Image (cartoon, rainbow, N blue to C red; front, side, top):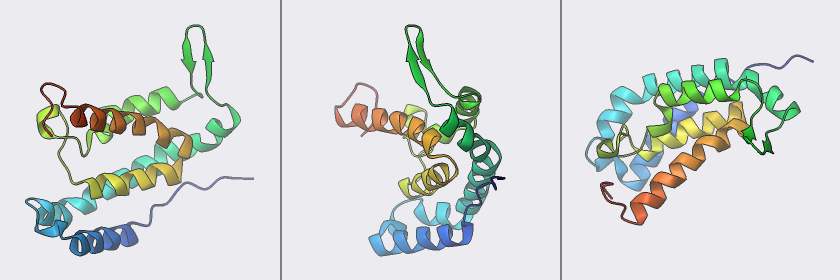
Length: 149
């Protein structure tokens, strides 16, 4: 049985982003209209390529070779460490993190759309960056020095 690569429904995602931004009033926030107008499509297209070309092929690998703990640390499925290194290097991990903290400061709606792609292409991998997002939120919520709220 051959596995087909994940294909993100970009048109539907863009429509959902626009409707969510309008319905919530977020479109009136500083920068939202620009991001949703000019930047959303290229970001989503790039995320879709990453999901299809990098994450989707690892989906079956992760299912057949789960992560496990050893005395030396956690061993991930073959290819996951390299995929995460590229994920980090390409800036996906910091998409909606504040610029002052080294992030890209993009709206959470954009990050949510990309997270949907990660989960659709490879749910096992998609759980990894959620740890970073949770850590950022926890540090901001606890008022860690140097992190803007």
